[in-house]
Image (cartoon, rainbow, N blue to C red):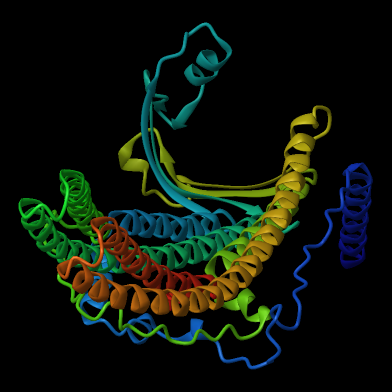
Length: 483
């Protein structure tokens, strides 16, 4: 009979809870956020091969074959302040996972308390205490002391998976910060390599200007002798002198750029300003290795910024579920057990001093739910923002690779043409100098030939730097450098 009664009570409780849940669900707003688009073509534009060989999978130590550059990168990965700040952000995100995990586990604490209380004699409690004996012949003490020691626990039952989803969202945020760190590593390596190649280019520009000034000073000496012999005019001397002054001024500008580039590199690697070791002699002869782009779908796994956006999207979806769960009732269990007595000598008296309690609560929002609705709608909006951000990141990555492939190809063709230009102008300098020494060419031909040759050599150096920078940026665009 008793078992039948308990079964009836349990069935009635389950039915009541189910009915309450249905009522609450009918009042919960619903908003659908569209799924993200990650469509990419099967191959890159103007690339006919479906080869999956991808330069992004090469470790950065193998990608850069310059020991001095690798040493700078190695130091930066340890000392760069921005990267170290990011690592602390990663650690904080990891700690947040533990905090969220602790929210759906029972909270257990211990308590010790002591108090004293004096109530009025002519009150209900005072009158009762005066007429009540603890034991025959022993009245309640006045004032009344109380001592208590025990343990208590509270536990919110995660019926709607609100707390577990919050913990999963924290995990996604942690993974997002990890990918953010990886993307920072990729960007840092690319920036160091760009600055290093710029420094080598500046060294070559300095050498070209120095050598050109030697030629111009020799030409200036010759034209001064010709003027003394009445074979040249003061105008020619003045024009060549002005060209020497102009190039000398440019020489100092390049020296200043070298100082600033060295200091920028020192800042990136986290050390005080000092000389940057490098070998710039073979800068022009450096070969630009072939970059293998693979297929577009590899960007989804190789690029840290895409994976960061994906984890942010997953976290936003979970946050939306958490915000929706706030409309439902929350269930909490509270329990405590301990010892309590008005005298310490009775504190360990069993079972008279034992106290315990067990309670369960159900709390649900009923009247003012505008704040909860606003939080839910905001969570939906943030989820849609994350969808757009994810799609934007994929589109940006695809465009970066396409631009990089085109730039590498066009710079290669441009460099070949500039090589021919430099060769032709270098030969013309020798011819012009011989004609000028034999008084068969005037100063203007010498001046213009030297100026054109200088500009072409400087442009060749600049194009080589752009080629190397394009290779580095392509490596970054494909998602290389962080692994």
